[in-house]
Length: 185
Length: 388
Image 1 (spheres, each protein chain N blue to C red):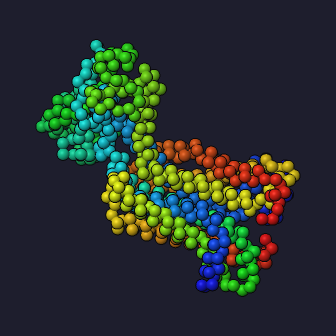
Image 2 (tube, helix red, strand yellow):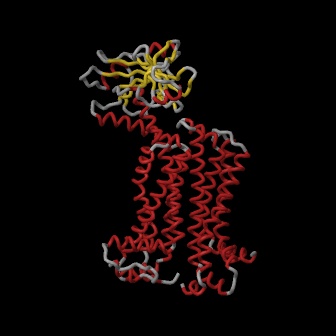
């Protein structure tokens, strides 16, 4: 399994330029989620003007999570593109008797790593902006360190787990193809 | 031409050359291509649908807020053509769902012969969630109570409601929000001091803004986004541009736009806009991937002069993806508001939000298909046919 992960890392390194856009998309979603969680008191205050502070707070949180998922779907689309480009390589691996589970692991390294690194960068940037903005008086809300940490953890966990879940299906489908079909496609 | 293109593409398309119009052929071709990469097509539809759902949620909230604001406006001014508000302007009280203000009505004179109605506005003593309006000419001995106020106060028709020490018989009145309408003196006795005036010309006459400005000494505007200047005695809103129905609707629409703008420019609105941008990027990425994988097919088509058809294929494919995403996203957005934010949901608000989003989805679909295809068509056919 560690060999599969190393192989996946090597492949991801080769395609790192193609992973910049999906990584940035995930980062944007994670950044927003952390910022919204940190600024929830201010969001609720604004929501009170619309008649239901708690509901507006919930809606903002749900929409921020949707933005994170959009980034994850961008990663998944890039993963499907990568799988299509590497279909002969997958055929070769299967022909040589590499277990399907190992091939799937190798294919999943790229999307999971992209989502995790993007989320880490975006969530960290969001946390820094929230704390620094409050310290500088630019953000009119008290930001609790615990809340920021919770938002950071939620953004990273949601991005990574969702990327794993949505990228597994195309990877598994590619591995299940007969090797001959993959080699001649 | 399309038949020739179909024949040129790789095996596995399974597009039957059955009879049918060009559009139907393009549609079948698009569906076959969508089925080629089911996961990616599914991800694209899901992503665009999520982005659309986010916008529909925000727009539904905004539409509900707009309706509340306009209904409250109708209750506040009762169709009067001129509305004189004090310094600081008026605001929407979200708890009661009524228009409120913090300053006393401006002490101004109306043009000769005009009817002046003074309204004192505030909250019912002891109940922040029920508004109280004292109105010149309201029936003595009675309190007009809206349906929402009846529910919140637990009243029944004919019950006695004591306001400012005066017992009043509760009678139902039409109106927005939770509002109790009493005679002016009763509201003053209850401690209300803030309010506004409405001015109406004599029956059969059209009042002009110049007449009002001359008599009151205040600025007359027709844009509800404008607020009274600091240090001024107030401002007059012209709620009609004359006697036409269209002009009256125009002021109400502007008033609604002010409310909707507040939601759109809130953090909630900004996050949804970011979501829409990311959804568009996702669609472009998905189409770019499809274009890249099929560049040799398109190279064959371009080499036999079917360049335009390449564009049509992608436009129809994009239309199918965006229509599916729109239906899914609009439904999902409505479901989220109905289940998680029921206080904002109404069928009218959701339909209005879904309709608004529908106006710009076609543009997104066209641009999302054009961007990658345009890049493809810039290349020579021989370059497209080369192994990559």
